[in-house]
Length: 132
Image 1 (spheres, rainbow, N blue to C red):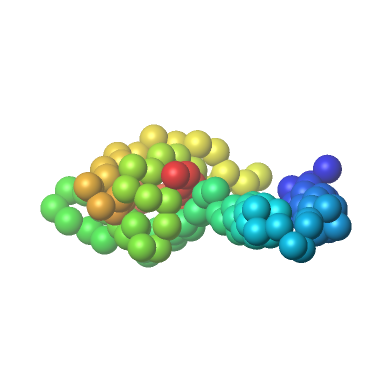
Image 2 (cartoon, rainbow, N blue to C red):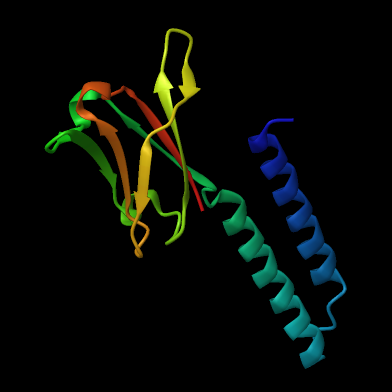
């Protein structure tokens, strides 16, 4: 099953659960109404979490590298990737059939900003997969 199909099934289950909770709610009982509200809020939180990204892909071309003395960098701000202050970064180089993992220098600052480094003669076209 694809991720999107699983998300749709999960949302259907949430709506069924809320419907059952609503039917079982005693409208004259404050505690029962609070239980219904708690169930609705939990369902909303679950739906939001289903659609929050779990990774960010930053593609780059050879022309995206900024040259310094004997190395080049690609910078990715934490505000762009949205994966927090301590993300995990995996770099991939484009090849004839897709992508293959490659080794690049990776630096992260305290705010989660990422700097990918290569020597000037090794600039690549590829992507960085960032997870939180």
